[in-house]
Image (cartoon, rainbow, N blue to C red; front, top):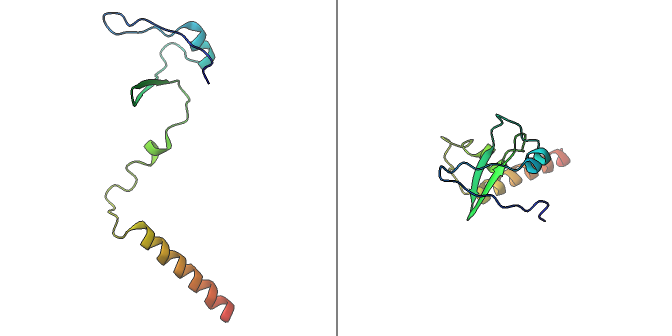
Length: 92
């Protein structure tokens, strides 16, 4: 769903000007930092106060913690352990 469709020219030094109507709509002010992403063949500029990419937030969390077992195996073991706990409580 395209709300604003505009075209801008890229001058020799590569600096572009964001049209006023877009800056106003997105709350972009002078000296704000915009996040620039390339997705496929698209350039995406994200305004300030944009929710961060969840994948980016999670990247690096497991760094230094190698995966020892396949995830499915760990899940099966965790489910079996939890089921065993519940079963032992109902038997007691």
